[in-house]
Image 1 (tube, helix red, strand yellow):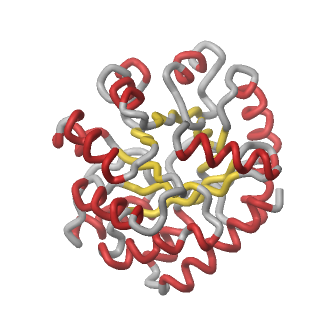
Image 2: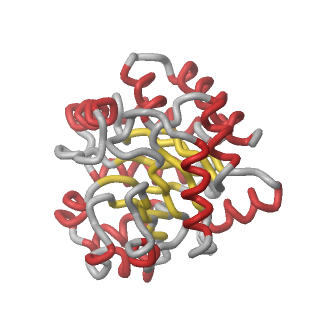
Length: 263
């Protein structure tokens, strides 16, 4: 059982949905990013999604694209991202960390080297948005063998024919993208999303978490009520980009977490 599996079991026993928060590793700099990551669990975050800065983030909107560039400009790398996770693990051995990003930096490091370093750093899951199921042998299957969950995205265009392929070799949870398009664009319709989540859950026992288009505590509550969790990224990253202090950002995160947990 991974930390992700244990967290969902714990939340299910308590009758609660998960709150998952995303921040970009190294944004706006390493030290501030580490301070924020360390503060997320006390702000109510159940699972941390740690963004891996990359030069060509094709699934991300302007807010997260700019965050990635800030991090890269500050010298953030995959190695430093894993170092940040290791520092977090010195004081927290229970909150799951999911590394979210693109395959190129991992490929450049080498899959075997990356998985060894990720395991040592306490990474629990991967969301690699540009590796489809057809490429499972590349990273998904080796990651599963290393006891790292490989989390897949399902979208509004994932039809009945495609869904079994998406669920193939997926573990940890399913990340349902609530809107068509990039991160930070539009807002999700809870009635439509709820029906899609119910459809997915007919084909899997894995938890389903909803992301994209969630920006407020009320939206987090609505989405968490029809799924196993709510994911917020761009709304948090925007506050980092606006130069708000870690204290202010974490206070905002807590309002989102409280929303998700009241569902």
